[in-house]
Image 1 (cartoon, rainbow, N blue to C red):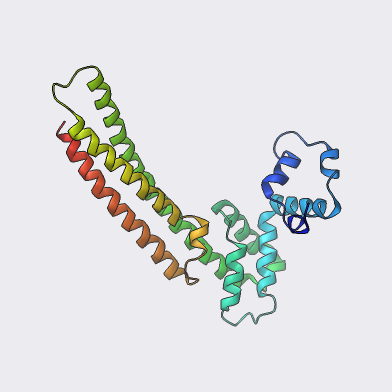
Image 2: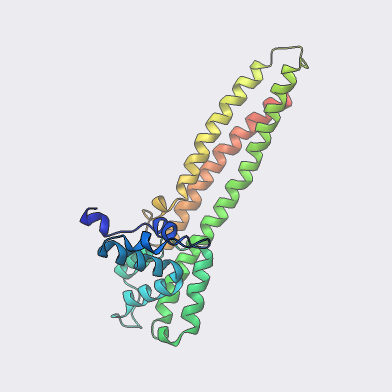
Length: 232
């Protein structure tokens, strides 16, 4: 194992080692690791089982040397964004609860709350856009289902004309839609979001604008598909 590999332990690897939620791994499996890897495993495991507290501590550390009355600096925003990158709604709520109820964070509460609010807006924006894509996905599934039925009926000789003039363009439309759906999903990935502007308003606008464009493209294609289906 190289020194570079020892610097990071994938949480999924740790989960497999400890068999979290199921049966335990033999101690021999864990203790057979070298010292550096074993330390990283236990550090990662600690972070996993107490992630909200771990994140709250990290956020407090980011702003502990700043004046509570100062505005949040760009560097603080950037560090907080990295810390909160993989946070989901449930973890977010737990972090907020810790900040609100634990007196150890009282002098950091205002700034941490502001940083959490930014992440919360991002999470909500993503959820709303995912819901929009899901609605579109249901419409696409309906078109696919109807196309399948048409092809089945054609196999049963229920049509007295060549249906390829409708089926071929329908299939082409569905291929185009699939490409656009993938592009839309990519907009909502962590990889894309972390490269968006730091300012939450600009980030939100970029996400919503991107999804709106893909939504419009898909709806136009769906209308063309439905027109073809009505002619069958």
